Image (cartoon, rainbow, N blue to C red; front, side, top):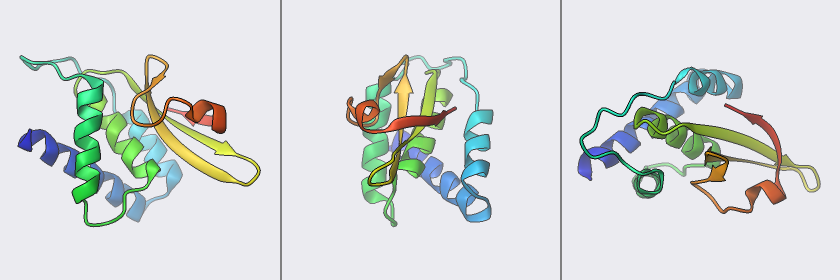
Length: 125
């Protein structure tokens, strides 16, 4: 568990660095480039288990972790563990709000299941 928590923390740092030296488009391209890796673990991880550990890492992160950072880090983490994950960015027009979440096989895994009802999908990678 400690190794996995450190891995999540490093993913959060990676996203922060990408955003510090780039922008949303840079982050989007970086997440898009990360492909799903073949499962090479003796004990494969489940998406809900990995999302739970990412949530714990967000609690201990020294800065507030917003949905975009958490979703980008989670999508990359899941892909590295052999799970085909997609980061989704959506928006609500009135009042304007944007939000990001992660889906696996069409199911939202790191947020409330009704996010698609609130936010119109703008992009996915």
